[in-house]
Image 1 (tube, rainbow, N blue to C red):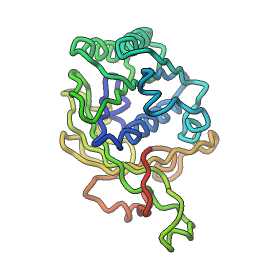
Image 2 (image 1 turned 90 degrees about the vertical axis):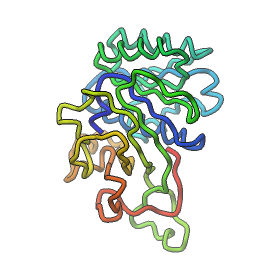
Image 3 (image 1 turned 180 degrees about the vertical axis):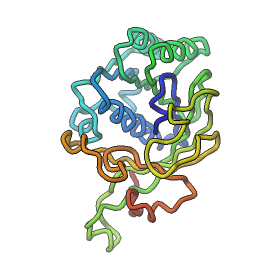
Length: 255
């Protein structure tokens, strides 16, 4: 989604504790799109507590999600204060093309500092926050995400018997906050899928991850442009009617 490519803070808040991996999956999917647009490093800051809770980044998994692990700089800190400091300094350097933080932003002052640094650098910075935590002030956008049943895998014969492997991850995404002037150069419209109206607070979408790990294929745009990025359709639409968003299968995916 083009709104998430803008320089500034973008808060991604899970609907429930179990939806935290979905928030991380969404952030990584957007970062994968940004990586394909040009060279540069991605800064990923996290606390030791977050690594104990959710694990550390896994190179083959990042590649499967469409990212280049060699261009991801991971910073693990002892506490939230150190993670926020590393994130701010990285943004001020203007070196990263995108940033991701798995940490608490404990003070409004720190949130404002991070927001100013991200906007000044023109770098999209994704904050994955706790589902029950306070909302981060000064964000460009704030999104609420929940896990949905994964998409169907074509030619998966096991699905007709109540089985089948999980397909691409699918999420339900709601826009809770959009700062004035946070529209993209295309007028605030989503870059993929069938959304043609400007983003509005309270809008909900179905999102399907569809990154292609094959770099040669990823550079080739297919008709519709959804196979190599996020497929987005309005929540009121029937995703099964969209050829780029196959009907959901019986399994769930958490990102």
